[in-house]
Amino acid sequence: MALSHNVIGAINFFAVILSIPIIGAGIWLMTQSDNSCVKILQWPLIILGVLILVVSLAGFIGGICRIQWLLVSYLVAMLGLIVILSCLVGLIFTVTSRGHGHPEPYRAYLEYSLEDFSGWMVRRVRSPIKWDRIRGCLAAAGMCNELEQRFRMAQDFFNARITPLQSGCCKPPTKCGYQFINPTYWISPIDMNADYDCLQWSNDQNQLCYGCDSCKAGLLASLRTEWRRANVVLTITLVGLVCVYVIGCCAFRSAKTEDLFRRYKQGYT
Image (cartoon, rainbow, N blue to C red; front, side):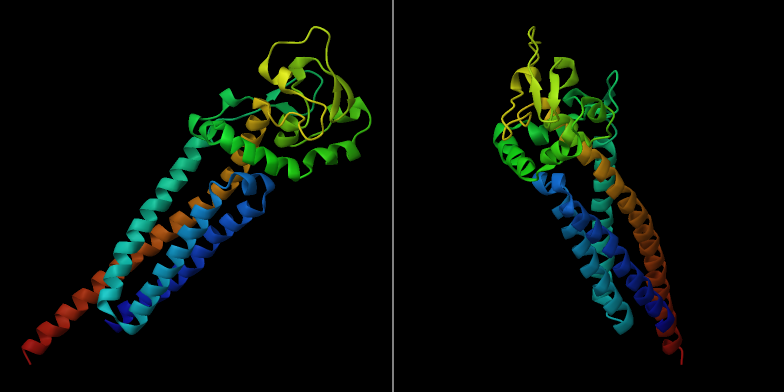
């Protein structure tokens, strides 16, 4: 029985280590300017990682100290956390399966449209109240000022690999036909397209295209890329936790069997 409990303690120490990538993924998302403005995924990841850490520590203590009720509580709680992590991994995979940018003639960067993204993600930025807070946060990041400093000539800008946020928020959509003066200052065409985003563009450096749907789409494209990277870490961690849980269940079952066998032997001595 001691051996089985030591196995449970050892594998839960490994589970403690597996909680670190989940917490790290949440912290990494917090450091990204776009995710820090939206605040959707990072806190659930951090909270889930901390819960897995606490439950794994409980399993480790229960295994080393042979506390039966603590081991049972660990198995029940860890199963619930694994189910939650599985649902989270599935959700991220589903909502980020769409959202590729569109190339434009003579442009190295891509253009983005809300119609390309999942409805769940679009609803995160549709509300005017939410978007007012998000756009203020994005504008404060200074990502558009960076373009002014980097590019002076139109052709240099058109050949640049700018970020989805810069493509959607810092310039008018290419289809509008604006004439380039600098990356954040454009001359309106005489025959202006009635497209919503074309009308929303402003040369006011505090406005630009932060009110455009293309800016919302650029934000979602940026979130999509970062969430997919985080989901790779979550998927690997999930596989590791499932393996740990299965081994833990087998070790717990073996410990119970050893205990019953020991009592059986004592009854006949």
